[in-house]
Image (cartoon, rainbow, N blue to C red; front, top):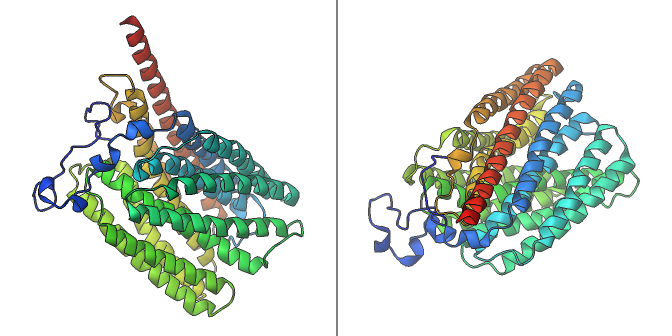
Length: 464
């Protein structure tokens, strides 16, 4: 964060000049959407800090465990094609433990800001946490040690937690006012979550003889709807909030965001039909083409926001975001290679690395570097005349270590798949662990400094 001082509740200028230099008030009301428009009154719609930060903190812990699990399962990683074991456990510690965990915390906090309504009750998000977190831990253990009954029990806990989360999310979306592009993305993510739950329960149930769908169909639904559907649409939709907010730019054109959403939804629909064996290859190629158009439009809108925003220097966090966008495009190319059965045995593993570690994990870690200090500053601002700046709550040294270690681990994973080397996977896992520990240090420092600032503010009020 750049760390410029701001009064509590004032997080963006009231008028942000457009690319042509015209004043915002000269534009029609519908076209002058600025960060101030959706951040106005945001403090009143904040959840208690314990709710989003418990999700973010748990995600950072699972991040460390994911790399350690990959270290344990390195032997089968370069040619990974599924099955139980520590490689699968590492994959799901990332997807369920880091990505979905962060998505739940971020959406619970950011969507009330976008939809201009507060979460009515906090017991729903708290209940989700206490159902979901043990479920992820149990699933990881069941996968790692190849204990099907344990895996099935954890999957039921996860499904129950996500079902409660879906109810909380839907209640917020039904009352949404404004930002139709973002709301549409989240609705597609919500529908994708329903598909993921059915497919995941079927896959887990297959190990104990209770599969609702054939394994091939369940797997063909689970992977694209989990990564591109649920997590992907949440990442793309929430980007329309966080990127302009941190760049101090205008909100992207609503019609363009809706077109991008429609293309992504069309891609998911084609993928769903192909999963049942109907024109599988042509439909999957069409889905990749529609997805590529959606991504190209999304990245263009984000590039405009970054180019025209008042804050140009966004540091290493947005370097990670840009790298993630590049890896998203690479994942679509790898997906095409899988569909066309490219003559490279490691193509499925390469697709997984590009999609999960390259795009989603890198994107989430880049955005968290901004959201955590920003939210911490907002919570510390309550009741104070001069709140701490986000930069004062950030451990820059830890983030530098994480930046180098994460990108090195990502590059080594790609190299390990290309040359089919478990030893390079082990080196990558060690580097990833170093980066994950550094990220945990960053998060812990932000929370500790936020708590100290709140305590000092209370003591100052008591003395006064």
